[in-house]
Length: 143
Image 1 (cartoon, helix red, strand yellow):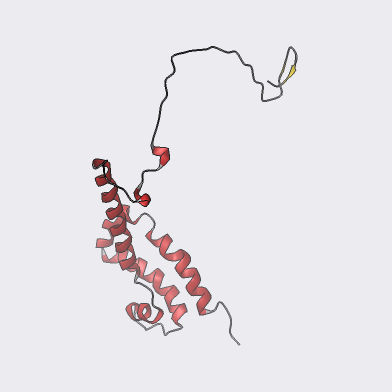
Image 2 (cartoon, one colour):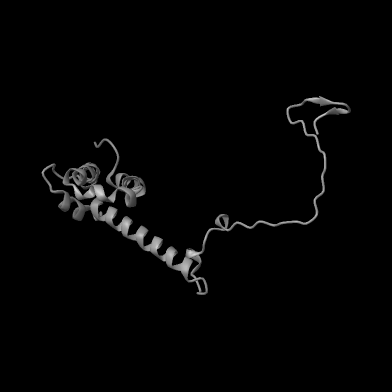
């Protein structure tokens, strides 16, 4: 008889959530990964989960666990996330300078960033009274 989650369920949960949580905001704090004690904290979190996935002994090394389960070491995942971010950030800066080039749709600027202001020459004043809270005025309630 076995208790707990199966290895496949643990692997699915790990792949879907843990790397995303651990690499969130990595471009901001990547300099902290220069220090071994910070790196070890991330390796420890990954190791606990991968140890359950591999159903291996506690004495198995973290690198061997990654190979057994087919998972990327978390430090490499963090570095990959930072590399992807800096690449896309550099691409966007280059595209801002080179406006007359064909741009792949995934690098298009978001429409919310394009602000358009229209000026009109005519100015018409209107008086509208709206009472959203149910207040009364001369002829009834509301607007």
